[in-house]
Length: 251
Image 1 (cartoon, rainbow, N blue to C red):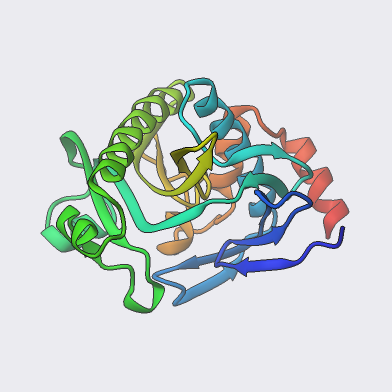
Image 2 (cartoon, rainbow, N blue to C red):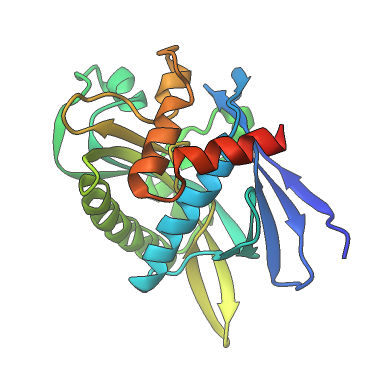
C-alpha cells in the first residue's frame, strides 16, 4: 500500500496506513521555535525523537496510561492509533522556565510548590494562546469529564517522567502534551498523542543545569544537537556509534 500524506506539521508528517484506525507518524529533522518564526535543520533529530518517544510511550503503556503508540517500524517512523485530536496543548511545569517567566516576571529555575498545569489553544495562527478550563468547557473543546481525565493523566505522566529522568541525572523542568479521543469496544478513551522527546520537554542536567533540549536551538546556545544525543545516550535507546552509522547511511 502506497502511503498517502494526511498532515504535515512543524516536526512530523502523518501518513495513512493499511488499517483505517491506524496512521504512520514520521519524525523530521526540522527544528522550529517561536511558533515557526525561527527554523533550521538538526541532522538526526527525527531519528532520536522516534527512539526516545518509543521508549517513553512504551513505559507509559506498562503503567496503563493509554497512548497512541503501537510500534516503531523504522528509524524515523512508527505506527500510531488514529485519534480525534483535542485542540488543547497541556503544559505541566515543575520549575519556572520559558513563557511563564516572561508572562509573570519570575526568575528562571524557581522550583514550584506543586506541578502547575496550564492549557493553550492549539491554533498556530493565534500563537497558541493561554486559556483556562472555562474556555475549554464553554467552547466545547472537551467535556468536563474529558478535562478531568486529561488533568489526571497529565499529572500521572509527570510523576513517572520526573522520576525516570531523574534516574539518568536529568531534571524534567516542564513539558507539553496533546490528547485525543478513540472509541474502543464501545468505550470512548482519552489517549495521549503526539510524542515525548526533547522537542516538547525541557530537560536540564541535575548537576550543571545544562540544557539538554530544544532550548539550545531556541536561544542560540550552540551545539544544537547535543541535548538530543545526550538524552538518547543516557536513556540507552541509541549508542553514539549506532547513531553515526544511521546518519551516515541516510545522508
